[in-house]
Image (cartoon, rainbow, N blue to C red; front, side, top):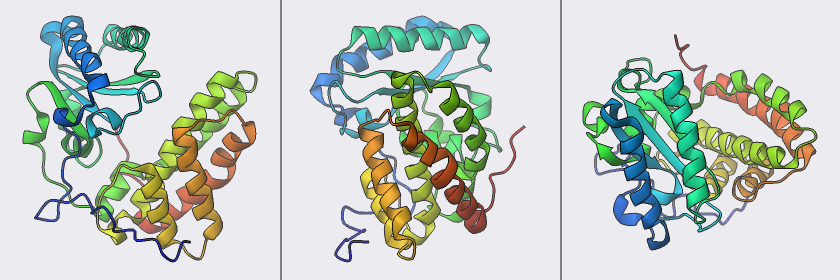
Length: 279
């Protein structure tokens, strides 16, 4: 651990009442991404029509930290009803079309949910929190008005990231399937690294008492609270770097699925417990 590190530098992402402030704003979208955002608004409305309740940007673009040509597009679409297979296919087609039309992004992903799910008791401290705190409204009524305000406490930690153990078997299967595909290994390395760093941060989030989406900072905050496990802090710093610059090394994927992931899942369960089972 860097003894000189100030983990509080830059603030803790809370409002005056000590609740997590909503990050991101359309005002923070950098000029190179403005045409993309306008195109997203138009295409989503055309694709879903009356089925669309609302749409939200999240990630680096609404935070104003996106890197032209290197960052991806992150979008959440809320429909009035539960998404159908056709709705999912439309989302995948939208991902491809937007990626092909805008060199400013390197891929993208669309989350698709019905409003009933997003507002449900089961998702109140997972997807509900995600909408209320991490998503920037783009189209339609903002669901955050119908959700509570959130504190960085153990309940939020458990419900947002208390299911890493359930992901690890899938990661191992994906690693085996990607053995001969460097592009897929790069994609997986970034996805795994992001999830691990975010989980590591929320593990210590209640102790730190704040929120950040900055992965580099998240890794440092985790390392600060685990001085007796410096090797884990180093692994998390390395994962934060991979989240920004994906790698194709199979050994990195194996480390995430077979070493760092299992340790983190066990520690998370010890500290916060497992996420409430979903229907």
